[in-house]
Image 1 (cartoon, rainbow, N blue to C red):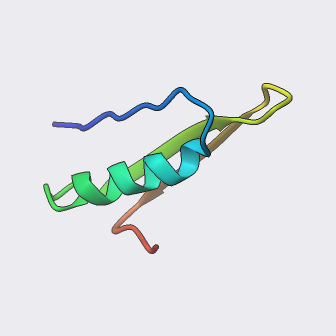
Image 2: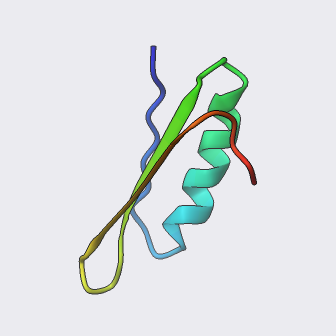
Length: 54
């Protein structure tokens, strides 16, 4: 099973997505990832196995 969260708006998306990942973590997931776009529309992808280290 997986959990998906998304954000589109004027605030910093990574802050919203990190909070969403924290909320999903208690469900026992063993990996996480995040994709964001910068102002130049370049893709930034981070994925990892294990618990969030925030």
